[in-house]
Length: 125
Length: 210
Image 1 (cartoon, rainbow over the protein chains, first blue to last red):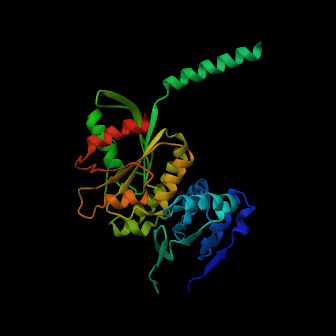
Image 2 (cartoon, helix red, strand yellow):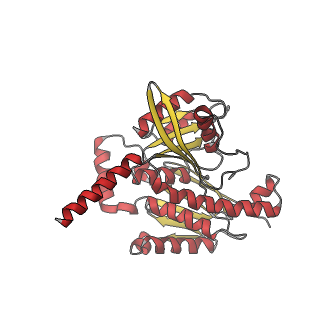
Image 3 (cartoon, rainbow over the protein chains, first blue to last red):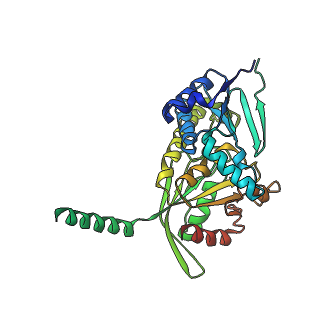
């Protein structure tokens, strides 16, 4: 059975980078897939990878991560660009969402700017 | 007066070391993109010797490799840098994947352990780079979070980036897909193995380090 845990941005907003990463890793190590509102900062993503590497052992094989961010979609005109700047100012890292899953459950996350496909590992049972 | 003298000394030493500083050119990317093959090609072309071993098994490079004072010449210009080949960055490492490649269990576990340390080191070294070549396998989907994270971190640190879509000699290569995934960057398709487009690649190195 797959467990998906929704983590609203307000739950990580007040935490520093170390605490954010620890919180997310703790959930993933409980074999749950995280659906995080918003996204981590780029240095936090790199730190999450580093911390994941430190945690890898015979049981925990790492993570799969993917960010769907409307900011990445092509801006077509000036109005959309202005709207984007406004949204960035108001929402900041709260835009889009991030999926983080344990590699033992999530085989691959295929993504393009507007779509995500989550492929799970075949059950060994 | 003492403060003025102190500032003069500080400025003198800062400028002295600035002049002496070598440009660090890093090779970054996911495992098996061809970073070491490209490092070997650069070193063979300009130093006459290879830099590291390559393998089809992922995570062959598990330690930072540095080749100092590589000087390349193109169009009457000269560029000297320290070439830094880094382990492939991944979000997961499973020793069982190495078993499938024919490694013994003990060997596979050691390789996995070393590979995790290699990823941590590669990320730590990001701060030390003056310019980075991100090497992607052009036969694979470029739109992965590892690629986005590497490029995002370089962007945040204001480090100049050149994107290389490697393995253009292979039938499945799709360099346009790499370009469309990262439209804001200069992307060049090469074959580090065969040397395809390597002259144009050297030209672009001047551009990003200039």
